[in-house]
Image 1 (tube, rainbow, N blue to C red):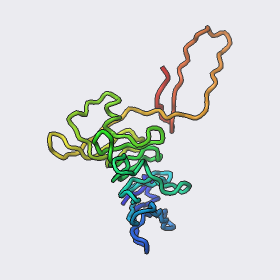
Image 2: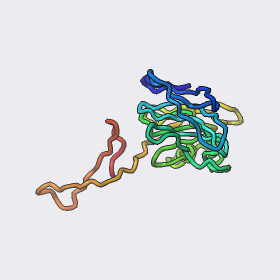
Image 3: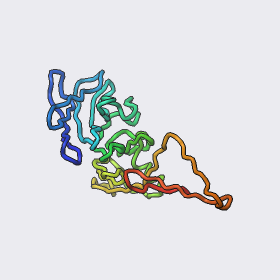
Image 4: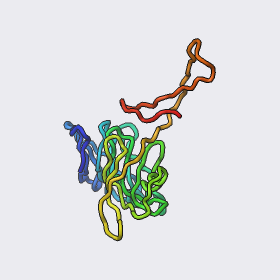
Length: 212
């Protein structure tokens, strides 16, 4: 069903004695990603990042739910899967190249379906993120997010506009992740007291923002 941007890892599903399991193929072996306990074995993978973070849809005791899988952590829920919660009846469709931004369809508190999930934000509706940055989305009902760009800032999916189901493209401003630790700034000899220092935030060779 999907692959990373290098074409080295393919992901999808395979039937086993337990049912339909999410799998990944790295060119040498088929890796069984499994499924959540408590429900029927009915899982599949939709996409994979360049660092082998796999996303898709699994099934637990509450029903279909989006998952994130890594070699070290195994299969994890993206949110709370109880009825009425964001991850209930959800599915992850895509992930950006570095594995930090996951998108899909869920049960968002604002009534929309399109979600964005990051380690900092958790599982948030794309609608709420767009509103936070000042966008007017009053005429759109965002159904899902089907694709995300490699840097994780451009999204495409399905929506309802003027009563018609159609596609959309949306852009988000860069989101600065919280960094554990601290930075020590040393003053230079002879510089005036109260000198303003501007700090730049870089990630993967890309300038993400600056201090005010």
